[in-house]
Image (cartoon, rainbow, N blue to C red; front, side, top):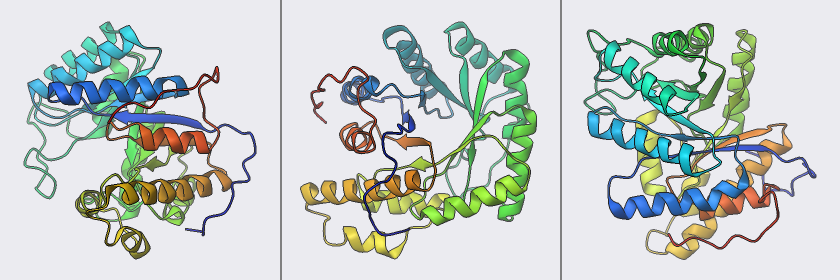
Length: 303
């Protein structure tokens, strides 16, 4: 990635979107909705809500999305996976989203039931892969469908070319947008974009951006998902394990550098993995010209 430099994007306002996850505890519920209210005035194109296997997790996702529809001006996109459910069960969830007013779904295969690193086994009566799920969504309703993309290939893919073939199948089934796994080297994203376009895939490929709230956790997750962590990034966080204040400042600088470089190189859409924490994401958006539409000051939420 290029060294930091002032952005030349002028007054062009990039489009933004955010990912949240459904809360598991009352305390997490408070944190989520403080973050939602903090970021809502930035008028994102959409916000996505993650989803996991199992009934209680599905219910939390559905409840979170339904509340967003009813109580905010946001346009929520509900995540949906193929894991541990039959087609009939998944179709019931899809119809429930449609009835709740949701018209945008993020369709994913999902992690193996045994966790990352274990072998994925599709449900015998379920959707076997994401392209099947996309086709099922389009059969039930005229959903906008977003899918995932992997600039450094999915960990289970035989090669990057094979992974791009899988993305092509999702697009052929009706996907209208893709969001990438997070990355830290922007050249990785642009090389991937060149390969995708050469394969005849022309849907928007939004870069997924993760502000590093906790470097150790992010690095561990990156290893499991096949995302590389450059040495220069590790160097920037070295020695800050017990210095939260400095760590937050470094995290803001690192994310700002990455986002400004993406914009300078022509990227107009950014997707932020918020981890249900608003302040760092809000600051980065402000830095690139994404501010409350009416210009009113926003009080920081307690995190």
